Image (cartoon, rainbow, N blue to C red; front, top):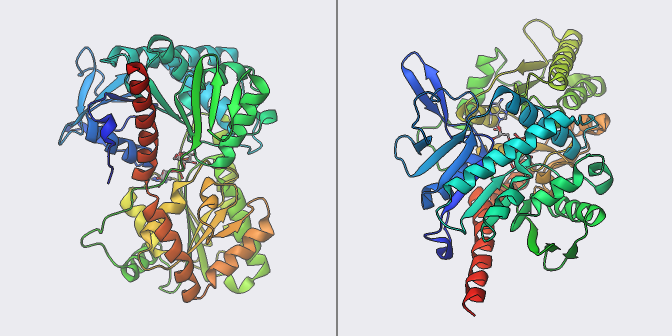
Length: 489
Ligand code: ADQ
């Protein structure tokens, strides 16, 4: 699944991410370990299992805080340990300022153009700097040599590459930015734009999902820093440091055949029964974190508009939205939840009758297995992000459809839309277009579904998450090899 490049064999690999690959939760029977549903964890864990490195993460709410050893080294996976988990324990103030404040009220809306105003507070920035330094110190403490391979994940750690570089100049630092990168004007409103760019350019390799985000980043660097950019070689030269900036589109682990999994007909029957819907009900599905970038309001408005335009769908079509609560302590997220609930209620008040509900809203986290059953049971999956780095839900829906059935509606503002051309591509801000796409999807002939799904399945299977990790590591190995040869001359 993942061929670790020979040239990296024996090298130490350190991962830094905000979230842990294993969450320790308290239960009546003691501390139990949960695996979060995340594409990143699947991909990066494959690397860690192959090379037995160390994964450094924020131990948010972990129940084993009191019981870990003084250095906090936990062997994982619990059933068959092959690498080490090391937590950085943050205080309430640090978590508030670094995670909720600067990362999620500042950088998140800054990078996603979703017309939510970023909030920049000096106090949050101070915590962000401090926490990046704490994680950088952890990397440095864990390094067994002067040139480990460090995999830095996401917008929580923009400053860390430079901080690690200052102490370990020979380290190979690969930073992957999981969210979009905006144009220079938009990014320019950040009061600490130069510091962020300088921090990121401490990386050896900097990865984005799409060539478009990569280009925005290079334009931003060009605007605000004194650098030399070689577009063809994909490098930024800044001070005496060279950074390769490249697109690495993320994906999912293509699922193995699941023994005993109910077939599509059984999934369709199970979900319709559980929702008290008739066996032939048309079903739409949306799965997201309850985040304002995901376009859930626009998705519901498109459903409502379809009912206005095509009243024959009233009673026949139900849309199920599974929305996992996220960052719920922030005002923007509470406001969104109120709006989403209000809109679902309004549409239901307008069109419900008897036991029929046009919109079913489930605001809970679901197991991956349950999501897969919903994907298999649905006629259409709707991904209408206002802006999204990639969007893995679109790929999970495709992977779940081994019958080559179902239709995918996909926002043109997702990274996924750059690969999945056979989806029904929509502008989520254009409600009429969304309504028409939904109507088209629900009436799509089986042959057309098959044709579109078949080529999307082939693409997601071939460009899976192991390919994502493998390509980055391969580039790192090539650069390390070059350095080794140079140092021998
Ligand atoms: P996210 O914004 O979280 O990721 P996405 O790529 O869709 O967006 O991944 C979400 C994951 O969470 C999926 O695996 C999905 O199945 C799961 N999930 C969503 N709702 C759930 C629910 N109710 N219950 C259980 N699981 C749920 C960020 C970027 C994306 C980028 C990824 C990976 O914003 O653009 O694709 O990182 O780089």
